[in-house]
Each structure stands twice: as structure tokens, then as C-alpha cells.
Image (cartoon, rainbow, N blue to C red):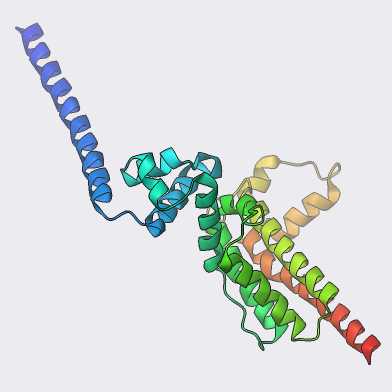
Length: 252
């Protein structure tokens, strides 16, 4: 009887497991069905593609995976985008649309600071976009407008064409590089740099300057690598300000 009771219990547990699994599958199916019933638009496709990239990286984005995210057939996407390349172009447009758009006539330093800080926020939320933004061979109007406006702010503030190009490149390279470093750190603000450094247990006689840095900057401090962003940006802008003054002095 014990065996029979055990069998009945196992059967009930197995049945409960199947029911639970079926319930989860049903919920996923219902969610996909709801998405599928909503009108398919280019905007929804881009949003779904970004969700796929957030979860699996840019390499995970395909017509098939985006269609699955939307709960539709892959062929239905072609009514709104011409293919994967066009979809990636649209994602780049969306990312750039979230960057602050500099205002012509604004002080150049303020404009570049606001754009750099805004771009960092967007890219930190979607670090996979770093390899996408400057790789598109068919930039859309939003991408082009962003580039034109930054150059316009610099030119209307006295930068000549070469220095404006150098400034644009330097600031963007700094922002992209910082986000790349920040998104790949072996620790987080929550986990703590101090705990990470302590775990390394580096001998001071072999790494005197690194252990000095850790003792001064990390030990007993809530060190956040992200706080370095504004300091580094100021260094870049300070040098651009010096170069601009030299240019204007030479012209005078």
C-alpha cells in the first residue's frame, strides 16, 4: 500500500509539474498571441530588435529572432524593413535619436558636455550599440543630423573645419571607449571595487604603485569607476579649449 500511495503521490507531483509547465507555456503563448494581434509597425520591430540585442547581444539579432520576439512569422517583417541590414540601420537611427541634439548657438563646451553625458547614458543601457553606430554604410537622417549639428555647434563657436573634426572625433572616442571599459569591468558599484582589489591580494613589493592606488583610492571608500567619466571628459574639453584659443590667437 505504501508503494501504491507513493505511486499516487509521484503521479500527482508529476501531474502538477506538467500542469505548471503547461501553464508557463500557455502564458508565453498568450503573450506571443497578444503581441501578434497588435498591428506590426516599424517602431515595434525596432523595439523588439533592441530587446533581442539587450538579452543576447547584437549577434543575436536576426529577422527570425525578432519575429519570434514579436510572435509573428519572419516574412511579415519584410513589409516594414527590407532585411537585417535595414533593421540594423533603423536601430542605429533609434539609438542616435536618444542622444541630446546640440542647439546651434549654444556654447560649444556646454553642448558637447550634455551630448557626451547623454550618449554615455544611452550606450551604457545598450553597450552592444557601440559596434553598430559607426559601422552603418547607409546612415539615416537622424544619424546625419546628429553629426551635422555637432559640427555646426563647433563651427559657429570659432572652430575651423579641421579642429571641429578633431574635437568631434576625440569626444566620441572618449565616450565610446569609456562605456566599453565600464561595461566590461570585473566588478560593479554594488559588488564593490574594494572587495575585488582585496581578493587580488597583490604583493606591494612587486606592484608598489598599483597597491598604493588601491590603498588610497579604494580602501575605505565607495569607489565608483563611473565617477571618472566627468573628470576625463573635462581633460578632453580643456585641451580643446586650449587648441581653440591658439587657433583664434593665430588668426588674430
